[in-house]
Amino acid sequence: MQTREEDINELLDLVGVDPDLGGRDLLETAIDDCLYDQSLLKELTTRLYPALAYKFETTAALVERRMRYAVKGLVNSMTTRRLDAMQERYGVDWMRPVLSGKNPTVGKFLTASVNILCTL
Image 1 (cartoon, one colour):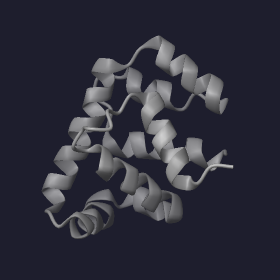
Image 2 (cartoon, helix red, strand yellow; image 1 turned 45 degrees about the vertical axis):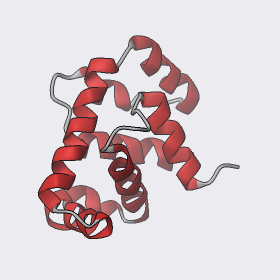
Image 3 (cartoon, helix red, strand yellow; image 1 turned 30 degrees about the vertical axis):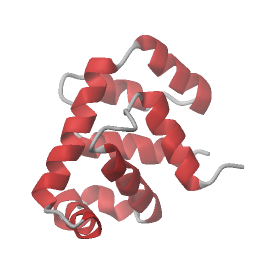
């Protein structure tokens, strides 16, 4: 059995978030926090971003920008093979509609990630 941190890292690897990308650490922490308290998914700008900014000693605006950059980068690197691998691994297809659109949002990505990880 994997830890929650390992599950989050596996999901981000499968989706294609580069471990060296600046926003990955924020996405990892955001997903973990949202798994613990799903009400954060409805209060990104008022609760989640400020909490992450405090943890990472930065501003909420920079948190939002880095996470948005990371999620937008996924669209450019997303392949049908990756999406199929995710569906095979998790048995659900919540990420395909999020990442196949032109402008996926951080909120949609976090919600899909939390939904996937809650099924484990």
